[in-house]
Length: 383
Image (cartoon, rainbow, N blue to C red; front, side, top):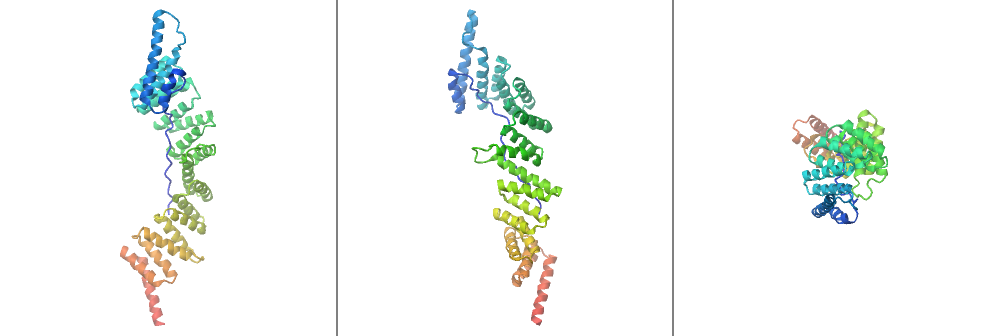
């Protein structure tokens, strides 16, 4: 049997969504509350009213030549950025980008507006512009985690994988305690660069430090399991069977899937530990009763070791189960017949050989087996 590669676990988007920044005190609280509750129309109306009010105060003060008492022009930036976030959640991407740009004009050093603009530009299918906006956010705040992660995502989408990996590593270096930073790099290595062995340490660190806390679906642990299982495939190809088994054991401890048990059986078979391989194929078959390969591999191994106590019974059971899954496989039918013949069940064996010939006319092994049975019958009759 051949090793099966696992399907990777789902991974959430790396880039943080545009968010309302709750920096406005008092009069902005209702708009922020509406945003956080999902009432984006209400939030948009609240932010627009606040923006209009501040601009009106500023205009009157300018017209009268008086000082702007209690009004900081920089207050407009977070309000405009939050307006953009509400527009983006309403699907009005172009209007959101315009609001973010207004926020940046009001305060060029406001990193959140640059970040939110980048997220919107990425959603609009403009990766080059999004990358520039993430870079602008990082010029304002070099350690801005969401912007650093977003940059990794954009570089990945642009298929600049080595640049993405370099950036993801920089994120881990800047935020060594961030589980998100580790899972981002693990995802990149596992899903995009086909380097599961290199992804294991990041996913293991994230799991050990609570990345899945509060999430019953355990996505990080699932991703770790996939990395371990797929890395085992690589170990097997390199001829490191002990290493492959060790990785599969760790993967099975996370989630005992049929594929992982099957792969474990395949590796163990190559180490000549047939008893352990038979047991592993049995685990796979128990988890996936319709997995023909698991039943068949288990039956063939047991048949090969038929002199070991109990193996002949295992062979019959497993090969019959394989036939139940695929009744058109002449080799499985033949081998089940051969196992029954070894157990002295000549009538059942003959029926299987005849059935194998019905499925595959001229099947030489079945023809020969029937000849052997016929000769044995003749000898018994002569005696």
